[in-house]
Image 1 (cartoon, rainbow, N blue to C red):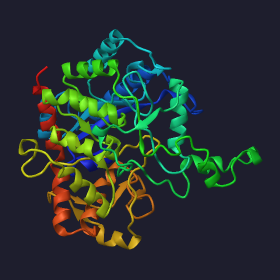
Image 2: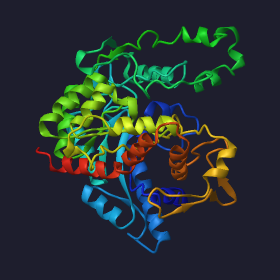
Image 3: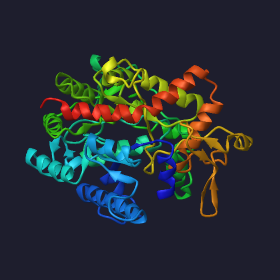
Image 4: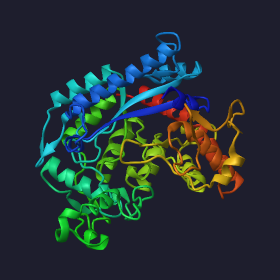
Length: 441
């Protein structure tokens, strides 16, 4: 891990947000689980592991506080870590039953007192970033359903929501304020030739005639069929309103991805009068392009998944150039970071290049001209972009950036803009965090 993340640090990726992820339903059905599936226990263990990692890296560099991996709890601490040449790491939580606050048949499984107690606990442990909702409806609001093609993970999660909450996703015509047109970039990935789950199920021979013979027959059983033009009718609940107010009191960062479009619009309405920015870090999981534009206009961050070549240029320029006032920019740039989102379901970016591209890529110099990169080696294994894996680990993002610069079919002006949006994103994030810290109660 030290080698891989150091590769990022030397290419000036100076701020990393580490979301601690958990889903109780998926945990319980996992035959290889080793730890407690309880939501709070799972998150507390991950927090512990993050501090253990920091301690380990410190030990490799001479003692406490001397390592390059620094968990930070304020924008000021982040700036100090970056000034010392370290990686500033922000802890966040991205889970479906936040603070054990699920709901079953519409009845919340926690109280306001529970929320305050558990929120204070994780705040003391250094968490500063929260998703109120993730993959299932919970006591705070509705979720944004997965619309991936095929009967893949989207349909599995639809079933998981039913198991967790006792009810299916309840759809309605989308409210006017969310401006949903039925398709959003990044939210509808193609799982070809079949979804991951499809491929596994089609290999189960013993179900015989009881199982559909073709993907088309299976798709006809998809419970999400016909819902792609609709929205989850569950918005932000009364407990959700309360959670947002408590997060604001503690100056914590609020992520609106994965929450229903109606709930996201409500969060923006609550935070706007306070000049309190929020975050869209997962591309189209912010709900709609209109909602993502509103996040940027209110001083928040909008980012997408890391990608390749021209597509990555398009994402970075789109997010960095969303409408925002000059006070929310770093010079002329809005700043656009990127998400990796790798925790078993998503994957790191692939690469469309060929082995012949490798000869022209290595060695290359970092964007600031200070570091020369050769093909990355761990032990006796070399990792490159063009051997079928693409970004096989985080340490290959500098290679992916250089590949984007050299091989995109976009204009030089677009590529330059994309690079500038990317390399101003950490400063844009810190300025947003400072606005949160200075916002009125």
